[in-house]
Image (cartoon, rainbow, N blue to C red; front, side, top):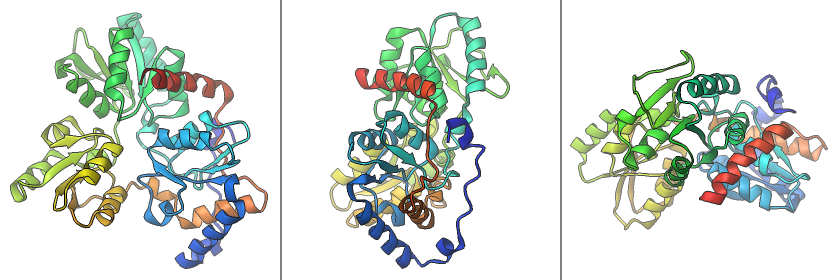
Length: 366
């Protein structure tokens, strides 16, 4: 299945037997099939995955890390990626020729990645370069589609992660005067602000209106109007409420949260950073964490000697991440067992080459 077909395809209807099976039956089936496939199968699982799925992961981590680990596992012919579509795309971009990347449920998308598409980006680039000339370099968060990564690679830019965003922005500014940052405005704004760039030097590009939302004569950061629907649910009033009720509790958030929230928090950093802060903390440490709820719940279980809560008490897990569940995982494994490759994610060769340029520029300069 080609990249452009992914979003036109309808996820195959799950046979009733998978929906009616008990968790115990499904779990036993996964272990049985994992044993059957052995080293020919590799299951990477993103930190935000459900506990009933993450237990089968051969590796856990962030999206790029998992794509790299999958490609490095040359013994595995099949990679069942427990994450969302842009992660599976990245895995396919980096995969070896003999590897097949499978997404158990095609509906497992990412609202942030979907907020920037190829047509919108090309229109924006045409208009922005007509205004600012050859002074802009595009940078994209790895939480973006393969086509956006390819656009960035084609125009001399690079990808970034939430861990290396500051380092990569320094690199980007050594190349050009301005940065077009896709698709998450919050990561771009938070990173640039920490580097000493004022909010008055940043503008937001609205792809729907095809215009900038602020009137800034000489901007350094042009932020795409996109966001993570999970992390935007952490609001400044959550911070104020927590400070009032429990002033000793430290607030730890992801930089996909808004500028107001990250500024008011005690610490802000990548998923890996959040996990390490909790892991290194002493017994009795108190945290309010602003990130995806599956991970927060997992940290609560893993570190019972600490007091951990979600910054938003009404927070729910990422809905698209939760599309990958036990029934779909077992179905995908059964299909493989029967000699069929379900929901294979294949990125167009040209798109993959250009996207890899953007990824490689990051890896070289990180």
